[in-house]
Image (cartoon, rainbow, N blue to C red; front, side, top):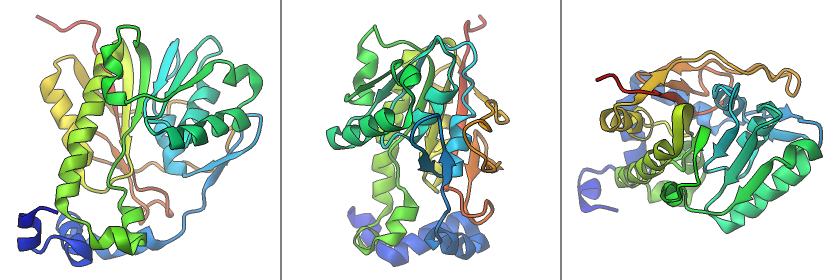
Length: 278
């Protein structure tokens, strides 16, 4: 924990409350209470065992347009929910590379793929264990579509764990934003021209959400933000209603106090222009 965080009393449970009340104002108390609540996960069945995940996660995954895509990457894929959704919805000629940096979490991802996807689909899914921030160093790694569900503050989990909460400080957010930028810039370099990238987190704070997207838009002239409706129909696999969320400067934020407990989950859809006008 940085000394300035301690000096400004922005640490622990008290600092956490103060920090997020400054972001959300009078809404914070209701939002905080909703984070303690239990969210009923949705059942997603692709033709094998069912996978249960937050409806906000499904909403994010189906916002990545898969039509016409032959190569798809799920960059930080464990425990596997979004991989299951992407694999179920991608075209029959497409292949999916599902990556997870942690070997322990990769094992869980492998189980999800093996148990929850029918043979025809999982034969087109490859699971690897690499650091997403360095995947771009291989010229072989080029994709038409990328989903990056980046590691984040995950405030819902922080609130529920007293050990995490007592050690919380804003310096953790800054550290994570740096790591998220490394992943996003790597993903952008692997995205084919004309392709789409969906960035998501389960963070509440804007520094890990719109803040990271803003940096990408400033760095890369070929990046543009899209605000899609749900682009893929998953009624064949899931009968739950998917939340719409709230528009932000560069994306959509699903917050549990307004979406029947779903989320929090932020996502932003980015399009890579084929050519940059002179």
